[in-house]
Length: 398
Ligand SMILES: NC(=O)c1ccc[n+]([C@@H]2O[C@H](COP(=O)([O-])OP(=O)(O)OC[C@H]3O[C@@H](n4cnc5c(N)ncnc54)[C@H](O)[C@@H]3O)[C@@H](O)[C@H]2O)c1
Ligand SMILES: [Zn+2]
Ligand SMILES: [Zn+2]
Figure 1: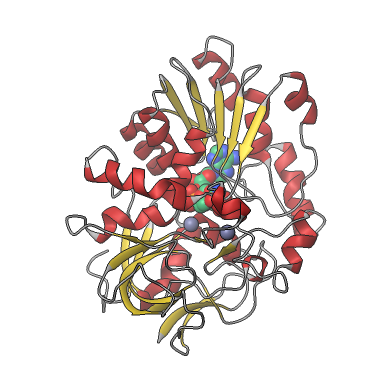
Figure 2: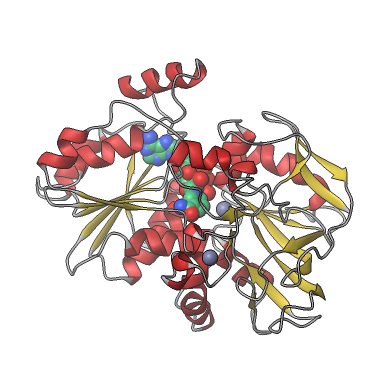
């Protein structure tokens, strides 16, 4: 089959690789109809996540048709159309029972999880297409994928929904939703969101649905900021505005009640702390650039909540622990417990309460995946979300 594979920093290719096979009785094989490129994939593309190997198949946002089911799976049937969470979870360990699926103890086998154990003290769950830190599973930017624990993750998509309406249930929609939930929004709250990529945009939509009185979106790409404005957010372009001053002005000098860092470890910008982060990241003295997180901790009001869906991989210094402690802040974060959120969000999509298609900028055949990566990495203003379709033979005008 054809699949998008990782070959090093800024080098992804479409290769012919062996078709996946059932390995365990609870596996299923899915023929991919739609898959997307995520901001998390850019961290792999930029070479800032350890544990990647040449030839690894990328992709953790996908859906398609069940074409083979292992003998131990009593839930799925051939021919069903399913969307698959990026988190691989067994469904019955200590953590899965608590619906903390991204902490699943069984999906990232201990003999494969030594890097994540060393980095984090514990190993996290398996993810599709996301390095050997998370199990080294082949991803879904391919014609076919093997889905382990396929009686837990995949959810059947009702016929009345198009692929594009359901695809983002695999990751970014639940991620934006959990990010807003982690803000514990109260009536009248102002929520500030750093980053208007797909995760930030879904966090904005979710925060408004949860009753935020005001959402302020921060980025520097005019097109992405306009999408945020279209959802009902007020916008701040950090290229020409002092973010802290703007937030104080928009909140009567108090600061936002909650802040969402939907940027993560590759913060842009040339604030002094970010230049320092760039230098340390280049010299491999530090893994992450945390400017947006520092700014969020600094700007949020006393007693405020800081939610961090943005991905961080390792270590960062100049963490404003004083602001965190002295202002009595709460930080909540995590890789999304996708399985927990899909049923409710699926209902909300069907009821027309959530729009999932407004952010798609490109629809490309799988063969044009490397170009999709390039656009998403280097032309972020115009490229808000790339959907790849293995069944499409050539781009139809994007
Ligand atoms: N927690 C999870 O389970 C989970 C799931 C999916 C994605 N993520 C992470 O969420 C983050 C966002 O994902 P995405 O797909 O939206 O990525 P993206 O790269 O499309 O968007 C990031 C946005 O942040 C903006 N940005 C950069 N520096 C900024 C700054 N200093 N201030 C304000 N905005 C800034 C960029 O301009 C860009 O628009 C990534 O780190 C990704 O890895 C986490
Ligand atoms: Zn993703
Ligand atoms: Zn589990």
